[in-house]
Image 1 (cartoon, one colour):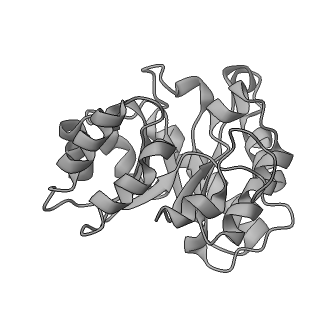
Image 2 (cartoon, rainbow, N blue to C red):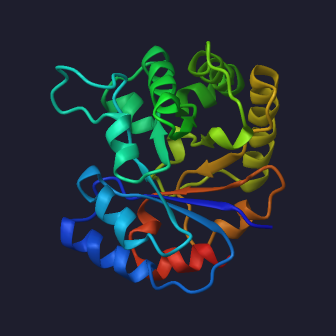
Image 3 (cartoon, helix red, strand yellow):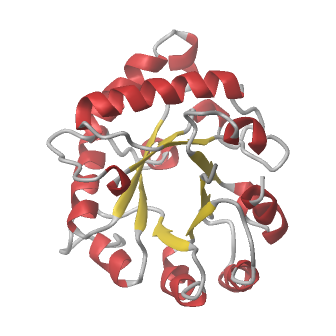
Length: 242
C-alpha cells in the first residue's frame, strides 16, 4: 500500500548541499511511496523547479499566522504557495518548544494556510512527562481540538496529521510500532469526530530505514515524517522503497 513520506530537512543542509540532494532525488526513477520534500525557505522555490518533472511535491517547514504586515523574519503562506509548494508543516514540536507556539497560534496558522490553498501538516505529540503521567491521550485530544477550532475541512486530503511523540524525536528511541499504531487509531478517531473526515495520520520520531518497515506496515499509520534520515539520498531512497 502506498504511504506518504515527508522529508523535513530543517536546517540540516547548506544551500549547495540542498541543491545537490535535490538533483539526486530528481533522478529517482521508481519508488513505492508518495514523497513530500520540505527544505528551508531559501531553497523552496529552487526545490519546486528542480522537481517539477517528477511526482515529488514540496512543502514549507512553517508559516506566519498573518498573510502580510510588519512581522520581521516571518514567512507568508501566500509566498510559500507562490514558490510552488502544496504543503506546509504547522505545529512541529520544535516550534512549540523553542518558539513557544501555542494552540491558538497553530489554529490561526492552519486557517491562514488553508486560505492560501496550502495543505497543512499538523503535528501533534506528548512530552516525556506527559507520557509518564498517563496524559498522552488527553494532551493529543486537546491539541487536536484547539488546533482545529472553527476550521471546516472540505476534503480529507486538505489536511494531514503527524503524530510525533516529543520524547522520541532525535533521541534514537522511537516508539514501539504497535503502540504507535494504537495512538494513530485514536488520533484518527478523534479527528473524525471533530471534522467528519477520515484524515491520514503519519508517524514521526527517530525513523530510519532500519526501523521504518515496522511503522509502514501498520494499518492506521499512513506514512512517515522523517528528519535526519532524509538528509542523504541513499537513506531517503531506501525509505521510499520499503
